[in-house]
Length: 411
Image (cartoon, rainbow, N blue to C red; front, side, top):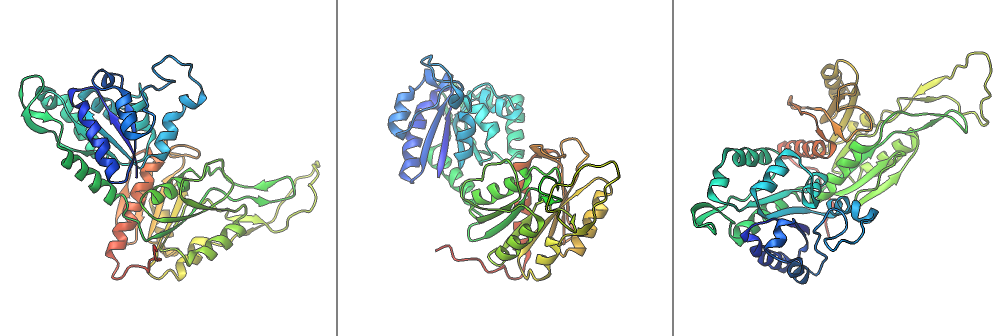
């Protein structure tokens, strides 16, 4: 795995060197990120020599005063995208507070906000700082967001006090890493088919009918599924997004192309998550030449497109099929009707007029309606977080099936 190790300022920072060595012995690639305070205890050169990689110490440029450039300015995004796990050890009270409150004032805190990878935090600090109500609240806040906290050990501290606050032992930290990474590979053996983005239905060589879908939700699902170990086939309409690492991309443009691609690849899948905003109607006839503007009103005859979700769900067997419903009114009522009429297992519904849930945003506010009667209403969160919750619900349903869908061989 590609692990980013965040080292913050405390006496226990020297123990992170041993952690790098142990992680490498397990075959992981380790990228070290140090805060300014951490450099008061251990030099970046130590970690560079151990990891064989450049140690990142500043958000812009490096500490030598070299001029910042575009590459350095967005490096935290690049590191976030290629990180499979963010491990912070030791984690000070300061870094825990910044993570909890969304403060992004250096490379490590900015990386934390930009990454969708699982996070393990191993605190180390004075006993009173660890016991302080502010720290306890911040720790619990991180726990509720899915961060794995490795509780500090009790013992004699560098400050001369005795109590909880010592960095947990190497074995405990590594066990937490193993636990998180094992949980995050829970889709290994699955093939997940994801559709994303809009379709374009041509009127003439110049004009077409489309919608406001950005594809961000579908791409977030594809990335999350790949991170969790699945083989992912992403069938995408025209979008301005990068293909997630490890994902097979199939480009389509029209609803007919989307339909054909989904049907062709559905046989390979054990899970299908159809997030694309496929046009419901298309022009009956496509004009071979551009329609000239005139003074009289223009009418265009439309015909319904194929209902892809309903078609693949007819013969899905034990495969899990997830559909989406972008609504402007009666969200719950419409979603439940769609769940039944389309024979889907889950419907992810949202009111696109709600704050934080519209088109081309990085956040969403959804309710996941399940065939077993469970309605899971989620607050506003990033589309990456929504994607993880959708996959959690898929696996919940998978576990309840009397027999899982046949999985392709991983050999």
